[in-house]
Amino acid sequence: MIKNTMLFPTVVALSTALFSAASMADTGVEFVSQDWQVACDNTLTCRLAGYQAENDSGLPVSVLLVRKAGASAGVDGRVKLGGAKESSSKALMKLGDRHRISVFINDKSYGETKPFSAAAGNAELTPTQTTALLDALTRSSKIELVLRNSRWQLSDKGASAVMLKADEVQGRVGTSSAFIARNGVTKPNSSVLAPKATPKLRFVAPTPKAVPANKKKFAMRSSQLATMMRSTMKDVDSDCPNLPDNSPWRINRLNSTQLLVQHECWTGAYNMGMGAWVINDSKPYKPTLVTTGATDYDKGKITSVQKGRGIGDCLAKKEWIWTGKAFQKSHESTTGLCRLIEAGGAWSLPTYVTDVKVAQ
Image (spheres, helix red, strand yellow):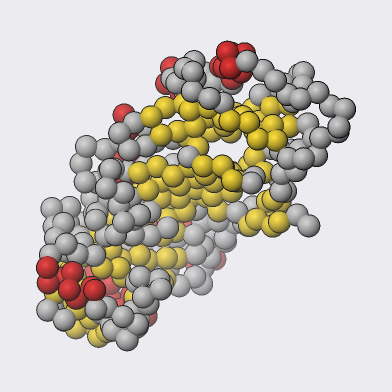
């Protein structure tokens, strides 16, 4: 959950709160160093995103490098441009599917990217450009993306650290496939970790009308609900300070015996969070907390979308789906650092992914 009290006084926003250290939990790894970040999901796919220098907000740019786990996995690269300056804004306004972005490393041209995709909002790097970029990022380099008369400069600061973190997560350190050859090749590529299976979830659509005609309608006072939900949290004052107030409870039936109940938990300058619990509609109620940071619920899907700062150029997202008896987390990601690339953030950088099938 991101409350405004946890949010970020500087432009690096998400890097401070979400990526301050790596976590090797099943939910993935997040790590930031200066102008670069890495997010590895629970399948061991790693996504490395780099940006312009923090103080160069007039010509924002981001490159995304994606590598799956496995000894033979390659690296795919994409570039996304943003811009507040008049010259770059005009160039971007005219950027269409037929245009290509030129890549220069240490003033040497590595040709044009593949055609810009207006639908995706980015351009794919060629294999030659990706290889040259990976090599350049291991040392101090001048990296520029050029479109007409505008030149966007990609920072190399922090790239080596996040590349090494990706190597660690995927078990590549000391192998020939490592991004960073820290101590040379000391292990065979066969020691590289294989991809982990994507967890499979079965989405079950709620049945709000599945109630016997003779069943008593659920009714409970707000104060009783609040007292019941307090037992699901260790620190109510921190997790759900608005629980005791008079704001209304929202109740949605999930099936013939279970309900989803929601209540506002906290608010801030540009974020808010609803508490979401599953309870039985009669004793024993057995309340189960799903989250205190929900922002939306729709037909069996709970969503949390929180801004890294007020202008909304970086977001954190979580989703939970109804599986018939409980809500299970189906997705967790951020859109990267707060670097003015575009509204809503530059990329989707998941740390938890699932394969969701709809029950027939």
